[in-house]
Image 1 (spheres, rainbow, N blue to C red):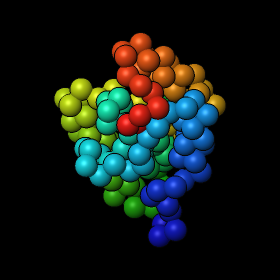
Image 2: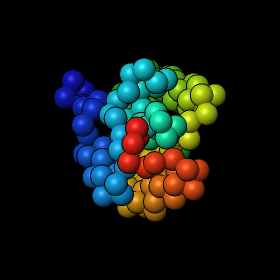
Image 3: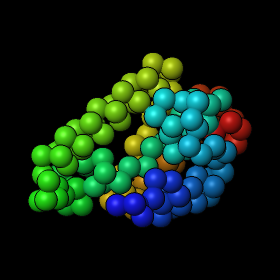
Length: 132
């Protein structure tokens, strides 16, 4: 478990490339924001979390398995992760941020979701190239 990366995962690299391709400016792992979103634009008031299906217990996903050894520990761990994620999303929304959660199993569909983000940002009069 010590070799499991918290930042710079392959899923994050894919999303970073999509954001760049869409011409969006962003900061990574913004610690000043609740939950330290993987990607955020404070001026545009949006944040993107790239969640691993296992660690964030993606409901209904085949990648979100529960280890059989020490099962009670893992169930509690996943529940704590879900609660922490929900608190971070709520705190960001209270700050009037648009929050997007991209699951690792959804990376193929993520491009269209990010394109909607750009369209909405431009529609709100926000410069998509600044302060992502």
